[in-house]
Amino acid sequence: MSSAVQLIRSADLAAAPYAYAATAPAGSRLIFLAGACPLEDDGSTTAPGDYAAQASRCLETLDLALRASGATIADVISTRVLVASSSQADLVTAWNVVHEAFAEHDVPSTLMGVTVLGYDDQLVEIEAVAAIAEANR
Image (cartoon, rainbow, N blue to C red; front, side, top):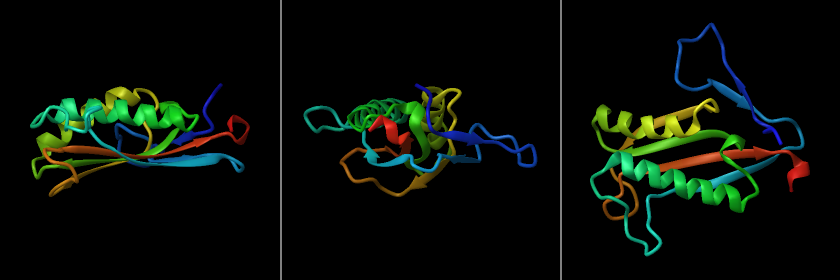
């Protein structure tokens, strides 16, 4: 089944590795996901110090939350990627993992450097909103 999400691009805006906007039709059910964190099953933080490994684990966690909601990554309508660093290189490292995972479904996204995240040794967190057709309930 195809996603309810429609990505919007504009030739009037600078080229970017994501869509500038996204919509879902009336009657879609929105799913607001908690920030996906790089936590292992025992609650420990994945790969302290490794931005790419933590971004990858966040995506695994995001995928599990989406499935529990009846959605997939193709149903995500927007993301916010939080990276605990003031180094642009660290932000880009995390972003590259996220961008690769979303592939052609390059939803509107915000990449932010933050001072600290909630868990010990946590460097990355991914917030997302998804939309699915009401018939998918």
